[in-house]
Image 1 (tube, one colour):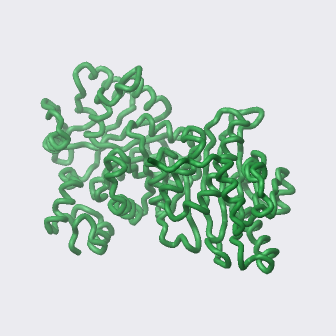
Image 2 (cartoon, rainbow, N blue to C red; image 1 turned 180 degrees about the vertical axis):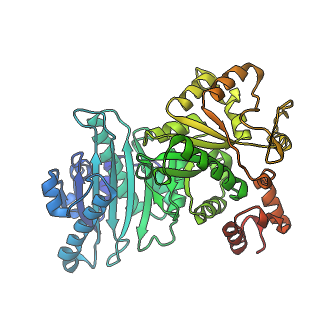
Image 3 (cartoon, helix red, strand yellow; image 1 turned 30 degrees about the vertical axis):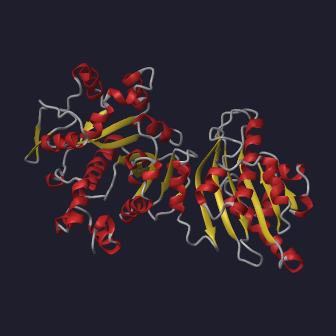
Length: 488
């Protein structure tokens, strides 16, 4: 039997009845929806030192300082710092030996009277783990998915109570903390696409693991780590950027992955006329490649991320198996061109009708969604033997009769010679002839026979030839950390 989920009022009351918890609520943008729950259940005098809501920008600036954007992480941090410092200055002498102080804050853009804007916000709590301790933070970015303002306010109030209660009662169990954020809400009303535990007491928490849990638990569909390995809010990175994305298992990232990207980057810049500074390159790890939630090896997952970020790459973790869902996710944040880098094997998957049984319009609907707004596939070639090898590994019938092109002295299957099932050939030709697909050229022939699975086998068998198939930084990391069975 699972534990009974406490109601929102029961959670607020549990905090109010704990005499050691004492703090401030500061809320901007959707009313004082969170603190309202603590007031209405009673016993608030023992919990709330102050409640404030500074709606006017001038008032807000006078209290917290200037801000470029009022719904931003920067503004949230200003609020937390200001409110917590007041608690510390005014109350430490009076009750610092028996109280754990906290400052809760949010800054939110809920649905306006005119409608039509992105409804999102930043929410966080700065708090002590015990009396006299240095404070730590929990910071989140949320998207409100309800249609109307009153619904969004209601959801924010419930979610904020879940956050405060979780910070005090579930902080030592990250998965339970994240699950409890959806209590009395479900996962259809608020999305959490970034979370961080920061400061004293959270030194051992890996925020990338928390991000993975967000995706696993259905709190979001995608999270992003920047080239330094830091968790980032996706909209900040994607805003007005052209996107060039490569999907893979990256166990480990190897020379063929980088060659695919290099070939695609050259063409993407030429065809789209977009500068490098205006393009965000993403390596995507899809959770469907990891098996079920119970099968995911967190150490293995983080090793793949570390190898990519060691090469200065930005990493996207998603549960969007279908490419059309992934392109729709990017379109939520940018109107610039989108390029998807893939090999012949993934191209074959896109034209596998079995993947679209859940769509009323089948493969036609999926392709219409994928290519509807400046999306292009950049297809890396594959030798016939390698494609047959891939199909055999996946338990598929081995295709025969492919035409080949000779490039760089090698016979390869390209986007121009690939053949889907016969009844889909006309559809494929239409997409190819109208520029939705592009066959990549200029590849390194030595990369065509590299397979991640075989690299892992070589590592485990002590066959040092694998070191020539991955970048030097990755080889050093695998040896120093003894990854994938390497003995160092």
